[in-house]
Length: 179
Length: 369
Image (tube, rainbow over all chains, first blue to last red):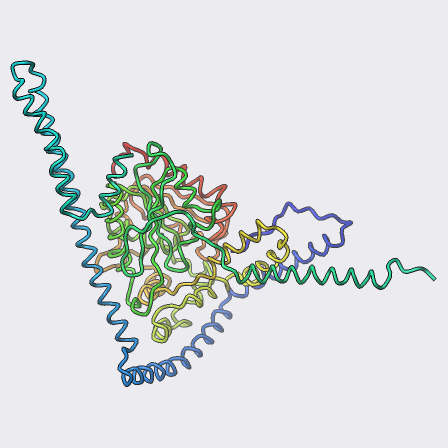
């Protein structure tokens, strides 16, 4: 997190503050090196390990007593204990997992529907093209195709959008397509 | 008798002025220390949530034709908050990558509560991350994606890449990834958490999760003078420089935003990885599945910070030989664990390197992996 000192700072020998700063920098660097070496020793690891262990040994029974007392107190007040709240939170996460699966399925259905719509549109275009290209002889069919094409292009997609609330994924895809 | 250069009243005035200056500086220092800086400001939207986890999508700032079709998912560590990736305007990796045309997503793990004490790497790697990726694919419409993990986020990303190699992952970027613990002398952490000195079960029995304050102390204690003395001296000396103060405050806001690590995941980190080096030994299993690094066949960029004291280079280098696939690169960047991705070194070195590696692998018509 700390930045290394800028080594391009050349001190001015006539500047007393500069010299003081230089000596301060040197002292800090030396101190830092000593301390970094100290915390990397076996002795430091041993000492901090013992201190933490002593603290945890003292804290464990105290915490147990506090937990038991609080649970009894909350029980008498007809309030849920921490354990009960935690249990509800865990159940909620399980429900969220199932909702996430449902959401993914909806995304999948939407994707499939878009593919189907695309395929239908392509098919309509395919069937419409030869009829319009054949000239006057097929004027009747061409007119029918022209009538049909917009419907088949628009229909299922519009229906889908109306009947199924569009998830954000589809909205984003639509936005991207528009862009 | 020589005349004094200044009258007593002038001396008093000068002293008063100095006192006022010190008072002003102290007030500025207090403000810098206690006022949080608004970080993580890039515009974004939440596209998925599960428990405390959130998947953010950053709003594109480039024209549609200039955007890269392969989305990039950022996965941060379980310690601290992901906001370091979007620290402040002008010093934000997210802003940089969005500006380069990437479709950027960020998976934020949130703050675990006591109800999450049983969350293990099994859950993060095989439940949360795949679900977030499933949503990313549905949202973006892309089948292929890139994954960038930092620190423990890189560990999670690596295990995911090994367990789900055919899930659409094209590019894997690892930043300061703690993966190889074979060198028992590589850093203070390994000594501190050895079996004979640290009873992880006792700690988790008291707290449930590993408290953020303890993790913070551990990280800072590795370089105590820099973190507890030099850091504040640098601020004091630069109180007149608004840019330095702003930068310091932003970093300080992030550093002090502490989060606990879910108990079960912390236990695995200490026992399976730090003590038994299971990932490199090929014995790490998640939900009964063996994590085989040889199964990774995405393209890999592994970035190491040469002066990293939290994840020393030797904890990352060795993994390159184990990773399968032929497009893999190890890159050493000067700087520390955080400095590599936030600060001047990041802007000049790490970010352009990541972009230079990822850009040709994120375009249209990329070969499928």
